[in-house]
Image (tube, rainbow, N blue to C red; front, side):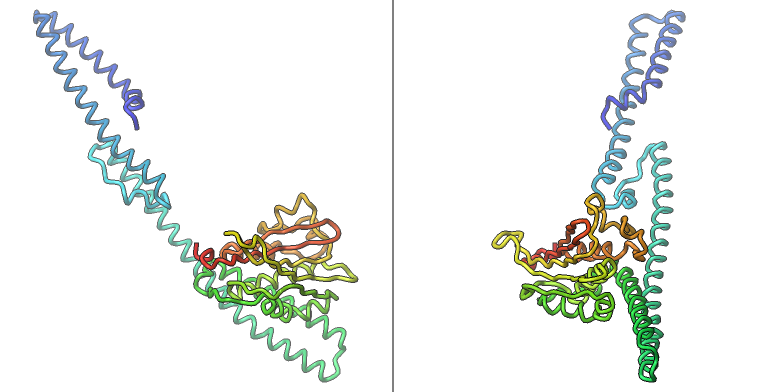
Length: 347
């Protein structure tokens, strides 16, 4: 707060003081006081009034500057008041106490919401683990039914539906854990071919059911990554391709390449592409948005808009680059970029 704005805010008080000085001079002159004494008295009073204004300004300036600095520099504005001294003037004390009450209420509410989120996340994780037990039992029952001569076509359809349910349950688990990925995140040197093979194996039944043929090329690269999380990301891309696969001749390709070789941005790229229906160019920038299904998702594909959102969310947390390309009606591809510099994962 500079002196000029302060004077503007105190202008009314200054005008009233000036009127008071004029009236005082008039009264003293009527009482027969000499002119020199009147000027001296008014001058002394004006001097003390000016000193009082300057002291008040300095007190306010210190308090307001502390508030302004904390609001700009502190990571969270709710913590700002902890670094501000309680002012000595009454108006500032009232403002400080009001801000302290608001800050405490806001911090209490934030703490309460965080506790609720933590409890909800713990509940989701527990629910997922509990839900997997009846799923495993359902798979076992289905296998027994097949062994007893059950209709194979119906059994295969039911098996695919169970796999779909299990994939949604796993999606819920990874979504819940994505907030605290650092608690369950271990970076090691992994081979692209191994992670792609594991993801294909986990989704083999759905790939076969949708008649999607996988193609793997140039995957003999090593990257720094957490195997479990990357396999989940690849699995989401596989399921997305299955969802929008063409009825005949559907393929999904996994291609590795070394990009920006020799530079600070050198990385290993894994491109997962399919020959499905693709995405409109106008919708491509939004494919990683939460809940976005696009025009394709409104044609009975049972799209939730969470798969690619989770891919982007987890890749951002792991320090893995992600981008998408598409040609409407013929292809859609997502590229994962793994930095070869290990220090990039700790920035």
